[in-house]
Structures are given as C-alpha cells and as structure tokens.
Image 1 (cartoon, protein in one colour):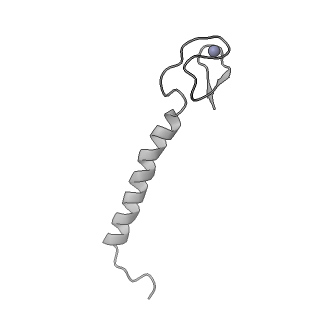
Image 2: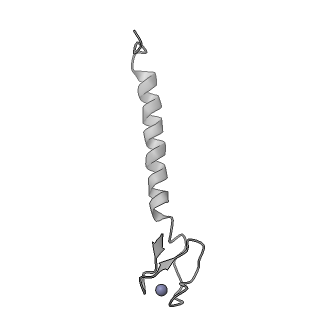
Length: 61
Ligand SMILES: [Zn+2]
C-alpha cells in the first residue's frame, strides 16, 4: 500500500491524486518496490540457469 508523501494517508495504486488532501501523486507511485524486485528476480533465474548449464550434471549420481 502506497502512502501520500504530503499527508501520509494511504492511497490506492490507481489513484492519480490523493483522496485525502488532493495533491497530485507521481506516476507509478505504488509500484516502485515491484519494479526494483522484478529485474533482480530475472537476474536470479538467469543465474540459476547459467549455473545449471555450467556445473557438471552429475548431481544424482
Ligand atoms: Zn495526501
């Protein structure tokens, strides 16, 4: 849940203005955490695939 930077009240992700004080909210104010998390997750998946390809496949022996 995002918070208004002016009054501190909670605002919805789809809101463009704060419902409490009416100040305009910056675009994508609610998904800052998600946008930084996804590249890290993709990098981790790619790293796992690279390690699976790079390491010798004798884990079950
Ligand atoms: Zn506000």
